[in-house]
Length: 395
Image (cartoon, rainbow, N blue to C red):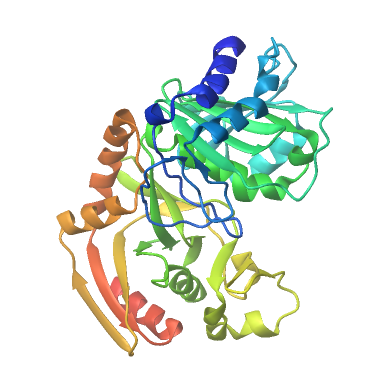
C-alpha cells in the first residue's frame, strides 16, 4: 500500500462522523494493567479501552477535533516515509502465521526474535506483512502514555504516543507503522504491548482465534483453561506447569488449525497473578532472584523464573476445560456439549469484520470439537492440578 492512501486513511479515521465509526474492543495485552476482559459495548464510544490504563475516547466533536490536531502533521507529503530505507527484513511464525517484517531498526528485530518463532521465506505464502519505520530524530522516552485503538471498516489504527503509531489494513493483511527512536529502544514494550496488540489486530483476518484462556502443554496433551477474569486461569496454569506441563500462556492463547490439529501459541509476556494467589507459591514470597512488578492488586513476573516451570512457545491442544471457582474445596469435572462450549468461548471474543468472523469461526469450530469439560473446583491449586493431571492421563 502506498503512502498517500495510508496517510488519507490515518486522517480519515480522525475526521469520520462519530456515528459511522465502527465500535471495536481489543483485549488487554499481558503487559501490567493490560489484561483481558469481557467484550462490552457502550453507546458513544468509538475507541473502546483496552483497560483502565488505555485511553478511552468518547465520540464527541471536541475529541474528534483534538485527534485531528494531533494527526495534523500527517499532512506531510511523505509522512510514512515510503522511500526511507528499511533494509532489515526477517520472517517469523507468529501464532502459526507466516509474517514478513521489514524495518530500519535492529532493536525492533531483536524484540521480534524474542516474541515470535523464526521462519524461512520458503515456508509458504506470507500471511501478513509488517513495515515498521523508526524515526531517529524523535527521541521520546518513558513513561509511555496509554495506548489506544480505533477501527473503521477494515482499517485499524493503534496509537502509542505522539510519535509512534501503526495502521493495519486487514483486507491486504498489511501493517505499517512509524515509531520514535526512544520507543524502538524499549524492547520490553514491544514484547509486552506492541507485538501482542499487533497480533490481536490481525489474528481473525488470517483465521487465528485469540481465546480468553490459559494454556499448558506436554508431549501428549495440551490443556486450554477457559473462564472469566478471576476464575483462576493463571493460578492453575502455573500449578500445572509445576506438575511438569510446559507453560504457554496465562490469559490469551492464539489458536489455529494446522495439519488437521488445533495448534496453540503464546507470546513471551509476563504472567499476572492476583496478590492473594501468592500464598500458593511460597517461592514468590521468599525468593529475591525473581524480578517481580506489583501494584495493590496484582503482580507480574516471568513464569520460567519459578522453580520447575519451563515456557513453551507452541503445542497441540487436546482438551478444553471451563473453570467455575467455588468457595469450598471441591473437584467436579463434567462433560460440556460443543454448543455450550462454543457459546462460552464466543462470548469472550472481540467484535470483528464479517470476513474476520467467517475465518475465525472455522478455527472455533475445530476448538470445540476437542473434549470439553466443565470444572467446578475449590481448594489448593497444586491439589487441583494433580487431579487434572490424573484425569487427563486416563482420558
